[in-house]
Image 1 (cartoon, rainbow, N blue to C red):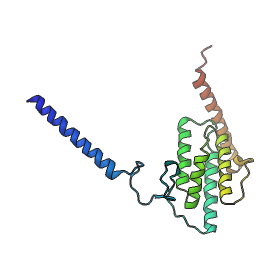
Image 2: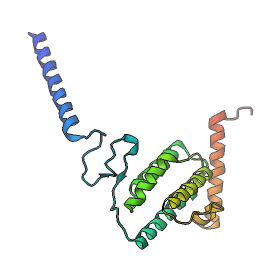
Image 3: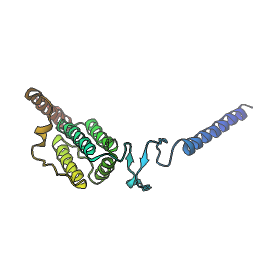
Image 4: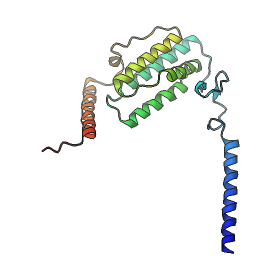
Length: 195
Protein backbone atom coordinates (compact mmCIF):
# COMPACT_ATOMS: atom_id res chain seq x y z
CA UNK A 1 0.00 0.00 0.00
CA UNK A 2 2.84 2.40 0.94
CA UNK A 3 4.76 1.65 -2.27
CA UNK A 4 1.62 2.17 -4.34
CA UNK A 5 1.12 5.61 -2.73
CA UNK A 6 4.75 6.62 -3.51
CA UNK A 7 4.36 5.60 -7.14
CA UNK A 8 1.16 7.67 -7.43
CA UNK A 9 2.89 10.75 -5.98
CA UNK A 10 5.95 10.30 -8.21
CA UNK A 11 3.83 9.79 -11.33
CA UNK A 12 1.64 12.82 -10.63
CA UNK A 13 4.75 14.96 -9.98
CA UNK A 14 6.31 13.89 -13.29
CA UNK A 15 3.10 14.62 -15.20
CA UNK A 16 2.83 18.09 -13.64
CA UNK A 17 6.49 18.87 -14.42
CA UNK A 18 6.13 17.77 -18.05
CA UNK A 19 3.04 19.94 -18.40
CA UNK A 20 4.79 22.99 -16.86
CA UNK A 21 7.83 22.53 -19.13
CA UNK A 22 5.61 22.19 -22.18
CA UNK A 23 3.65 25.35 -21.33
CA UNK A 24 6.81 27.30 -20.56
CA UNK A 25 8.54 26.17 -23.75
CA UNK A 26 5.65 26.64 -26.16
CA UNK A 27 3.82 29.65 -24.76
CA UNK A 28 6.12 31.86 -22.68
CA UNK A 29 9.39 31.88 -24.61
CA UNK A 30 10.19 32.16 -28.30
CA UNK A 31 12.84 30.16 -30.17
CA UNK A 32 15.67 32.40 -28.95
CA UNK A 33 14.81 32.03 -25.25
CA UNK A 34 13.68 35.61 -24.97
CA UNK A 35 10.39 36.66 -23.39
CA UNK A 36 7.90 38.03 -25.87
CA UNK A 37 8.28 41.79 -25.98
CA UNK A 38 6.48 43.58 -28.82
CA UNK A 39 8.79 46.60 -28.61
CA UNK A 40 11.79 44.52 -29.74
CA UNK A 41 12.05 44.42 -33.50
CA UNK A 42 14.12 42.21 -35.75
CA UNK A 43 15.79 44.07 -38.58
CA UNK A 44 15.54 42.79 -42.15
CA UNK A 45 13.55 39.76 -40.97
CA UNK A 46 16.83 37.89 -40.64
CA UNK A 47 16.49 34.55 -38.88
CA UNK A 48 20.17 33.61 -38.67
CA UNK A 49 21.44 33.79 -35.13
CA UNK A 50 24.56 35.82 -35.99
CA UNK A 51 22.55 38.28 -38.08
CA UNK A 52 19.88 39.13 -35.49
CA UNK A 53 19.97 42.77 -34.49
CA UNK A 54 17.75 44.15 -31.76
CA UNK A 55 16.61 47.74 -32.18
CA UNK A 56 14.75 49.39 -29.33
CA UNK A 57 14.55 52.94 -30.69
CA UNK A 58 12.98 54.44 -33.83
CA UNK A 59 14.79 54.12 -37.13
CA UNK A 60 14.05 57.55 -38.58
CA UNK A 61 15.52 60.82 -37.30
CA UNK A 62 16.37 64.05 -39.04
CA UNK A 63 20.09 64.41 -39.86
CA UNK A 64 20.70 67.17 -37.29
CA UNK A 65 19.10 65.12 -34.52
CA UNK A 66 21.00 62.01 -35.58
CA UNK A 67 24.34 63.87 -35.50
CA UNK A 68 23.60 65.26 -32.03
CA UNK A 69 22.67 61.79 -30.77
CA UNK A 70 25.88 60.34 -32.23
CA UNK A 71 28.04 63.08 -30.68
CA UNK A 72 26.50 62.56 -27.23
CA UNK A 73 26.75 58.77 -27.48
CA UNK A 74 30.41 58.78 -28.51
CA UNK A 75 31.31 61.31 -25.81
CA UNK A 76 29.78 59.03 -23.18
CA UNK A 77 31.42 55.96 -24.76
CA UNK A 78 34.93 57.47 -24.86
CA UNK A 79 34.56 58.95 -21.36
CA UNK A 80 33.72 55.49 -20.03
CA UNK A 81 36.75 53.94 -21.75
CA UNK A 82 39.11 56.76 -20.70
CA UNK A 83 38.17 56.24 -17.04
CA UNK A 84 38.33 52.44 -17.20
CA UNK A 85 41.00 50.89 -14.91
CA UNK A 86 44.46 50.27 -16.33
CA UNK A 87 44.43 46.81 -14.78
CA UNK A 88 40.76 45.77 -14.67
CA UNK A 89 39.49 42.86 -12.62
CA UNK A 90 37.50 40.09 -14.28
CA UNK A 91 34.30 41.66 -12.94
CA UNK A 92 35.24 45.06 -14.45
CA UNK A 93 36.05 43.43 -17.81
CA UNK A 94 32.70 41.63 -17.91
CA UNK A 95 30.88 44.80 -16.85
CA UNK A 96 32.48 46.80 -19.67
CA UNK A 97 31.63 44.12 -22.23
CA UNK A 98 27.98 44.12 -21.08
CA UNK A 99 27.92 47.93 -21.17
CA UNK A 100 29.28 48.08 -24.71
CA UNK A 101 26.91 45.42 -26.04
CA UNK A 102 23.89 46.90 -24.25
CA UNK A 103 24.66 50.44 -25.33
CA UNK A 104 24.84 49.29 -28.96
CA UNK A 105 21.33 47.83 -28.67
CA UNK A 106 20.09 50.92 -26.82
CA UNK A 107 21.76 53.44 -29.15
CA UNK A 108 19.05 56.14 -29.38
CA UNK A 109 19.13 56.03 -33.18
CA UNK A 110 17.87 52.79 -34.70
CA UNK A 111 19.99 53.02 -37.83
CA UNK A 112 23.07 53.70 -35.68
CA UNK A 113 22.17 50.78 -33.42
CA UNK A 114 22.14 48.36 -36.34
CA UNK A 115 25.56 49.55 -37.56
CA UNK A 116 27.01 49.44 -34.01
CA UNK A 117 25.86 45.88 -33.39
CA UNK A 118 27.23 44.66 -36.70
CA UNK A 119 30.56 46.35 -36.00
CA UNK A 120 30.70 44.79 -32.52
CA UNK A 121 30.32 41.35 -34.07
CA UNK A 122 33.16 42.10 -36.44
CA UNK A 123 35.37 43.89 -33.87
CA UNK A 124 34.63 42.50 -30.37
CA UNK A 125 35.46 44.63 -27.30
CA UNK A 126 39.08 44.68 -26.12
CA UNK A 127 38.88 45.05 -22.35
CA UNK A 128 42.28 43.85 -21.09
CA UNK A 129 43.40 47.34 -20.06
CA UNK A 130 42.46 51.01 -20.35
CA UNK A 131 44.93 51.46 -23.22
CA UNK A 132 43.57 48.52 -25.23
CA UNK A 133 39.94 49.51 -24.55
CA UNK A 134 40.56 53.11 -25.63
CA UNK A 135 42.45 52.08 -28.76
CA UNK A 136 39.70 49.62 -29.69
CA UNK A 137 36.99 52.21 -28.94
CA UNK A 138 38.63 54.80 -31.14
CA UNK A 139 39.01 52.33 -34.02
CA UNK A 140 35.38 51.24 -33.60
CA UNK A 141 34.29 54.89 -33.68
CA UNK A 142 36.30 55.33 -36.89
CA UNK A 143 34.65 52.31 -38.55
CA UNK A 144 31.25 53.59 -37.42
CA UNK A 145 31.91 57.03 -38.93
CA UNK A 146 33.07 55.42 -42.19
CA UNK A 147 29.66 53.70 -42.43
CA UNK A 148 27.93 57.08 -42.18
CA UNK A 149 30.46 58.97 -44.35
CA UNK A 150 31.55 61.16 -41.44
CA UNK A 151 35.05 62.31 -40.52
CA UNK A 152 37.08 59.60 -38.82
CA UNK A 153 38.42 60.65 -35.38
CA UNK A 154 42.14 60.63 -34.70
CA UNK A 155 43.24 58.35 -31.91
CA UNK A 156 46.15 60.55 -30.78
CA UNK A 157 45.86 61.57 -27.13
CA UNK A 158 42.21 60.62 -26.97
CA UNK A 159 42.59 59.89 -23.25
CA UNK A 160 43.40 63.50 -22.39
CA UNK A 161 40.13 64.66 -23.92
CA UNK A 162 37.89 62.33 -21.93
CA UNK A 163 39.45 61.67 -18.51
CA UNK A 164 37.21 63.18 -15.84
CA UNK A 165 38.47 65.16 -12.87
CA UNK A 166 41.22 67.49 -11.76
CA UNK A 167 44.94 66.76 -11.78
CA UNK A 168 44.67 65.59 -8.14
CA UNK A 169 42.02 63.00 -9.02
CA UNK A 170 44.14 61.81 -11.96
CA UNK A 171 47.12 61.34 -9.60
CA UNK A 172 44.92 59.33 -7.21
CA UNK A 173 43.79 57.19 -10.16
CA UNK A 174 47.43 56.55 -11.13
CA UNK A 175 48.22 55.66 -7.51
CA UNK A 176 45.29 53.22 -7.47
CA UNK A 177 46.63 51.67 -10.68
CA UNK A 178 50.04 51.09 -9.08
CA UNK A 179 48.34 49.54 -6.02
CA UNK A 180 46.38 47.23 -8.35
CA UNK A 181 49.63 46.32 -10.07
CA UNK A 182 51.09 45.27 -6.72
CA UNK A 183 47.94 43.25 -5.93
CA UNK A 184 48.20 41.42 -9.27
CA UNK A 185 51.87 40.67 -8.67
CA UNK A 186 51.02 39.22 -5.25
CA UNK A 187 48.15 37.18 -6.69
CA UNK A 188 50.32 35.78 -9.50
CA UNK A 189 53.47 35.05 -7.51
CA UNK A 190 52.16 34.87 -3.95
CA UNK A 191 53.38 37.00 -1.05
CA UNK A 192 57.10 37.50 -0.50
CA UNK A 193 58.07 35.26 2.43
CA UNK A 194 61.83 35.54 2.07
CA UNK A 195 61.88 37.86 5.12
